[in-house]
Each structure stands twice: as structure tokens, then as C-alpha cells.
Length: 119
Image 1: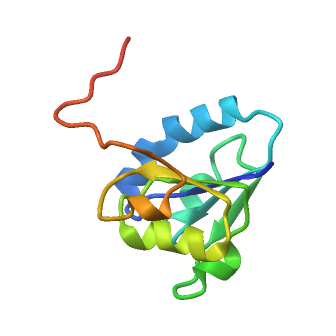
Image 2 (image 1 turned 120 degrees about the vertical axis):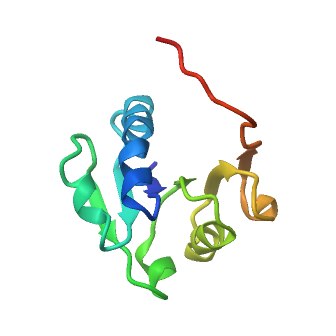
Image 3 (image 1 turned 30 degrees about the horizontal axis):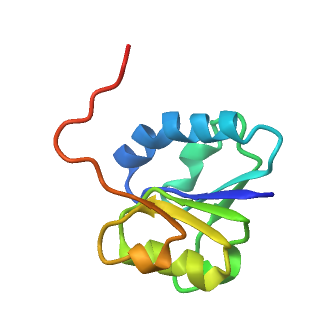
């Protein structure tokens, strides 16, 4: 089983996603883990241990570049879910926002209000 994470599109969001990527790595230890990111963001993930492959996404060719059994969507856009579906990724997980629920195989409601983390 292989995992592909579709990274956020902006630098600040990508940095804030690093703990989530670390947790995915921990949960799926032993499974190949890829992170797919825009060219401007991809270098951030080269410094992250545990990522087996970084996919630099080319605009309009994304679906041909992505492979995986499970795709985890960090962007909340319809387009990001469409790309994974078009790529044939079997399991597509993410927030059910932006009318993309039919494209996801596992969807969760987006949290409302402030999210706090245990210390």
C-alpha cells in the first residue's frame, strides 16, 4: 500500500502541515510515502525525514504524475480532489468542503471555530 499526500499550495500552510505529515508517516510506518507539491513549495519537503518521494507537480499534468493507494488531501479545493480521482487513486481522504464530497472515499467535516491541541 502506498500513500500520497497532496501538499498545501502556500508556504505557510506547507510549514503548518509538517506535523500532520509526520503523523501520517508514523501511522503508516513501513509504507511508501510520497508528497506531491507545487514547484515553489516542493523544496520544503526535502528537509523532512520519512518522506520517500517528492513529486513536483506540473500544472495540467498532475493526474498523470500521481500514484498511490491512499491519497490524503491537505488543500480544501474541489480541484485537488478531482486530480486524485482522475489519477485513479483508490482511497481519497479529506475535508468535505467545496462540493467535493462525492469525489472522496473518506470525508470528514471541517472543524468549526478554533481548534486546540492537547499539550
